[in-house]
Image (cartoon, rainbow, N blue to C red; front, side, top):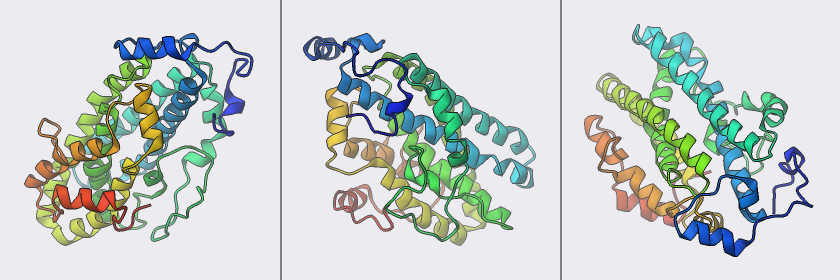
Amino acid sequence: MMDAKLRPYVTFDYDGFTWADETKMMEIIHSGGKINTIAEMTREYFDELVWLLVSQMDSEYVGAYGYMPIVYIAPQFAARELKDVPAIVHDEFTHGTRIRDALNMIGFDADRWVENHQHDYSFRIRQGEKLSAKRPTMDFRVNIFYYDLVVPKNELMTWINFGLFQFLQDRGAGEQLRDTLDSSFAPWARENGKTMSEENKHIRHGDMWMARLFQNYPEFIQQQFDLWWPRSLATFGRPESRHNDLWRKLGLKRRTNEEVVRAFLDRSEAPFGLQIANQTVGLEILTTEEVLTMWRQSTVPGKV
């Protein structure tokens, strides 16, 4: 069933629409075919697709807003960052716009959704504050985007947070994007293919800065890593997920949450998983099996 907050943004006669036959749709998906239009979707497929797309779009835009203040401090760490950081911000806005266009194409008024949620996109919880069980805004961002990268009057810690966010969250987001590159919804797979190449650049940027910063500020880096690490792990969902089971059945995604987490930790091709990437940094990180055991038991410290 479509989320009640999304329903007003559907631009066609949702209740009277003649949805696709489920058997025929699933035959297309099981044969490796792709879905391109609303007419090829069941209502369930449409509902789940819209939820996934809005969640990604909001997260991309919120991420772009969160990176914008970093532009002002970037040149303090390297002159070229006055070019690189604005380019990263631009990429994030572009990623969101690609998904916005896909939503508009399937009869969801993403332009109006974005206009109505502008005040939400800039919202962050205060430093040191814990995220409550009830979402503080009406957008569909992934929870980690409620935390602020900017530490007032502390440019070094802000820059460390920025590097760590790319090292962790961009790597995790990239692995989740990779899971959609063969999605049964062709426009999503196509647009995320473009986004994937840009996300890989962000990951490499974070890897470079973590290696540099850890040499000079190992205690600060480890301290902030320990803060962001559980927040990043929490974005992969739960080991047993009915939503993920349904998305895989519909071909929207291909792997279980645990398979995605394991790839995030252990991917052996560039951009490498966290464990391999950390070999050039030196952070204290639990082994993959220890992390997965904690994650399966939902005992990741600070998990939200």
